[in-house]
Length: 276
Image (cartoon, rainbow, N blue to C red; front, side):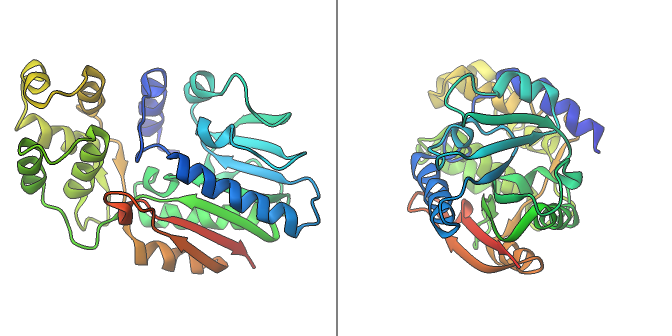
């Protein structure tokens, strides 16, 4: 396990304030719910066993089929402590601390696995492939893996162009802008992007947080989200949509995909995969 990354997740858990499209939208949640409902019907309405990769409260508290049992695996004790929903969960729901690359789940025991942005949390594509292998291991034959992804745009964005557009008032959503900058700094790297480098790109243009607040009209939390990247060696990795699809076909069949009808929707595709 990457202990430097674990320290980052522990440190930010208490202050985590994600907004769509970094967090799932109501349309994304409806997509997850439709997949769960269809699988429940397909399996004769037998109670489903579900796995959620990471504490994503909006997914954990979605409308699950009757009788669903849910296990949520996250490797950060602080995330489990601060983001575990107090209500709205299935009656049988348990948080478990563990590494997605070594899931503490029995082989062939899960009907439905769900995730949100999971691939990006790994520093390299090879680790994302390990995740797929683990999910395939714990799924029952014919089980589903449904995940919302963060994908590089087909036409690469340049950091300077993004900042020019920001100053021209073309970004109303600070969360979207921040994520596009992360992707732009990442570029075509096969080794991910260090959050410290993203902060450096921001700081080179907005060294004074108070001035940035006045100029951009953002709330303080949006500025703090970027400030937390300072000196962080934690790395994120991004893939193109085609790479994500190719990665999926190594372990799964019956691949289905959706591109949400939102600004930069191609960067937030949904994939549904079936275990062979």
